[in-house]
Length: 176
Image (cartoon, rainbow, N blue to C red; front, side):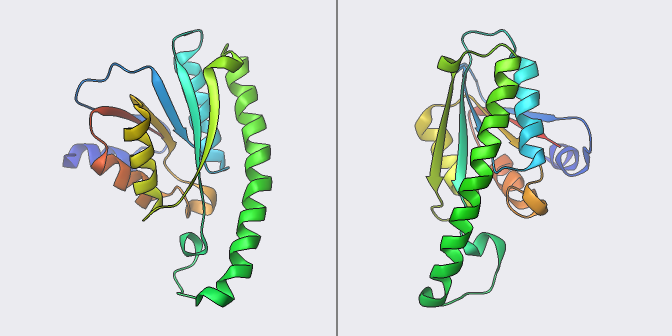
C-alpha cells in the first residue's frame, strides 16, 4: 500500500475507503464485526452497496477478544482466567445483540437469510492475523470492516491498518 492509500485510511472521517488488490471475482463478503457502532455502519454500507444482489454471500466474522486485546499488562495465567471468562461472557451478550441488529439491516436491504451466515473465531497470533487467515481460507473476495472499533481499541486503527497492509487478491472496504 502506498502513502496516498495510507493517508486516505488515516484521514477519511466520513467516506468509506475501498482498496482493491489483484483480481477480485468472488461474491463472498466477510464483514468483520466487533459489536461497535463502526462495525454496524460497515454492515449498513455493505447492505446499501449490495442491496438486491442475490449472488452476494455475507459472513459476519467475529474474533473473540482476549484480555491482551484490551490491556497490555501480562497477567500470569492463573490471575487472567477470571478476567478472560468475564470478557468472553460480556462479549457474547454484546455480539448477540449486534448480530440481531446487523441481520435486521441486511434484511431491510433485501438480503435473504440464505445469503447471510455468522462465524466466531478464536484469536490466533493477533486479531488481524485471524482475520487474514479467515479471509484466505474462506475464499472471500471482499473484507468489510469498521475503521475504529469498540472504544477505539479493538477493531481499531492498528487492526484495520495491518489488514490493509497484508490483504492480497481481495478488496478491503474500510468504513469510518
